[in-house]
Length: 247
Image (cartoon, rainbow, N blue to C red; front, side, top):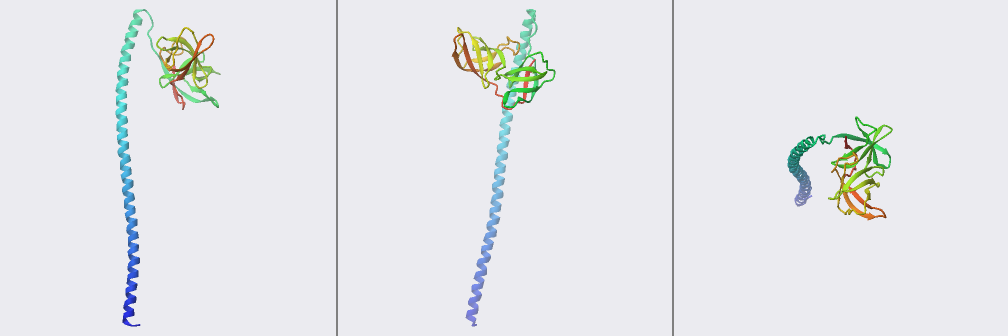
């Protein structure tokens, strides 16, 4: 083999090695670059999530402080009204007005498939008494006794009945459950219940106190002897937890 051929073969070998080596370096460099970019993106997203969570918490804290201030003011005003009312009642030789409630816990549904009846954990329950039931500040039903146990009948239950007022004129009626809504029956024909009238408990049945919000009228229809109003209740009990019993 002459010298020119040897030189040519050496040059070809060096070029091949150089190309393969540079490709490997480029691949390694690309892997390192991708790794660094992924770390940067993850860190950036994590930092953005942390900042977003911080601002969300800050906004929630600010909103809760504002609501707490409003509730505190309302509590002070309510206390002032209660003291004034009690003094007026004493002057008239009447007993003081007060509303007592107690937290009660739902244990289980009384019957599978019926979501309007619940067994309650109710310490001090009196089986000879019917209690009003509240949920998130609204009427929710009644509490009765079954075999000595506290049974909640939510206000959509057909056996849940109580006395109500409708609208600004305090039209009287009796609320009955229909399964998913409430109907107010036996409304006198000379009354004029209207759609969107607010419905509140009347307190005349000693189950609820007067003024407790029930819902709004969504339909009114007339029978031969009286009106019937369909009410959409304010209380929506999707996941039963804690209620308040009116003592």
